[in-house]
Image (cartoon, rainbow, N blue to C red; front, side, top):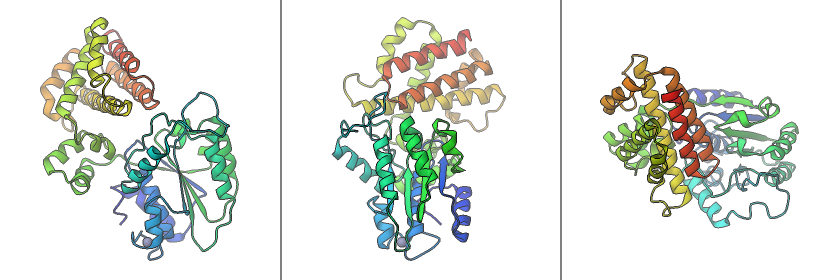
Length: 378
Ligand SMILES: [Zn+2]
């Protein structure tokens, strides 16, 4: 059942049980890494709850299923980051004016076609207070007709302080026939008072088999390539997908090069080298560059995790099993588990900063310095 949502059988069971007894919390928090299907599950649940042909599954055919699937139904309010992060709370009427309407429309269409699409809008970093005020207005209207109103706050942690405060009030108010679903890959940024009012449903990493099958079915990949990317996905469908048209071997070579830079202790060279990582400096949009850096960081994480597994004496389930010799060479020189764990943390920090759309070059340079600190001097 729920074929639009890949895997997540445990989560589906939780939702199915709620459907059977028709008992839902006021709000769910769907949490877990990016690319596990949190938004996809939330959209699917919105359809199921309003499907006129079935109580347990979306028929994908009735007017409600279709309208919700297109993200154009008044029954579904899909809220996502639209405002630039100005560092202060916006309250003027020109909120989000930097964000072009046609870009937003295009992104919504992509999300509707593919609920695993990660909405990316330049400069749109936060859900602002005006969006939450608009939402409260919508929710104050009475619901008729036996339908269920669904609110999805996608990547809810992108609400800044004032927006979170306003949203907390919304959560505390009772609403007719309404289910609120927050999705977040970073729930620790949400107020504890918000978290305590949501039922937390954690999403699992997808298995390589689930990802491989989905890549074959949805993206038309050959099995061999699908298996290869699934192994390098780290359990995230969108991570696997983002590698489809990439020169993965080349990217991985860059990862090794990045490590070498961090370990060579010649920072003067490092600065020049970094420009190789920011593809064709000058060309390519910021988002394209960001995506490449994100992929590099993702592959770097897998490399370090493999190194850690090797050091612990296990070479069984390596992501980079085809690079065993290189990995062994790496761990023979930098085999301190503490250092590798520290290195993993600095990659995590870099990932967070990239997601915040900070300048890429300083982020990568800092990472090189941190890697050196962790693996060489640390
Ligand atoms: Zn239906």
